[in-house]
Amino acid sequence: MSEDKFVFTAGLQKKLLIAKLIGIALVVVGILFVAFGGHGHEEAAAGHHYHWLHRVWVNLWINNIYFLGIALTGVLFLALQYASQAGWSAYINRIPEAFGGWIYVAFGLTLIIFGLGNYAGPSHFHIFHWLDSSLYVEGGENYDAIIAGKQGYLNLPFFLTRLVIYFVLWIMMFRFIRNESLKEDINGGDSHWRKLRVYSTVFIIIFAVTSSTAAWDWVLSIDTHWFSTMFGWYVFASWFVAAIAAITLILIWLREQGHFMQLNSDHLHDLGKYLFAFSIFWTYIWFSQYLLIYYANIPEEAVYFLERVNSEQYAWVFYVNILLNFILPFFILMTRDSKRHTIFLKIACTFILIGHWFDFYLMITPGTLSENGGVGFIEIGMAVIFAAGFIYVVFRGLAKASLVARNHPMLEESLHHHV
Image (cartoon, rainbow, N blue to C red):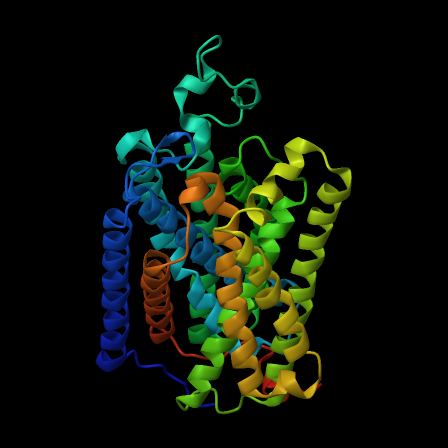
């Protein structure tokens, strides 16, 4: 088949730049509203003097974790296709493969946001409450026996060591997969595909461990007194369905631009089934976690949901979360035909991507900003900036190679995929 190349045009780059500038403008407007709206620096947040910059750092952290997860689980989706010897997806594999480029960016952003957000902000603000050294001084005014008991795991040297190990492993495995995939384009044969199966299997094993521990480190430890044995699965489910939605939207957009001309409704149907299934899976994990805590009614567990459901700032987000991530995708994608038509997929994917951003917002904001959280220009602008940056990196990755892995041994099967 002829090579299908994506050209990342100057016009498209300009549009993404404009989107970033709009996002920056929205953040600036949001900062002005917060700073001069009567509560920019005088209220307490998470036990500290509140400042508008705290909200900026928290939003940076939310979006960094959200888009990193989409990139990682995009690569996971690719690895699953190789490890399972899936043929249907060979035609579209380059899209999730391009997601891995964002992991490099996220590594730098994670270090910067963690360092500045916890140590350079005003009023000694910490995204992670456990970083406050006074919590470990026995007999001190701020001593916290529960947090002090977790010091063996939640301490700065070990935390940073784990962070670096995660990214080194993810980047290393992604580089192996990406390089082998590009070599396959040049050399053909099935030797590269066999190596890709091995690399993908190793990546899946690494991801299975590190995705859960990273979720504990970067999200769960924000609410240091609370814990859930299902939390790793919960974060994975949110990341994975958001990644499938992003893959589907980009694929549909590229098809509308004249690429992937041999894409058929059966490919879309399979992606739609992933969206439908993992929306239900996410809801299953959400409901299981919530129900267990609800009927046990143990105060130290129930407080996590009480501060979200009984709060003026977060209660509406709690219910919108369920609407966007389960109810709407469930009814939109329930029928077979809806999974095969781009209009329904585009609507469902948009709801899912927005909904799971709200999911991470709800996981992170109450524990960091307390009653000072909100959804306004800062949140919208920051999400736009990160989305534009993520799309830019993905499009650059797509432009560096053929859109189709033309020597994939199962490409012919994929081109004639039928369900």
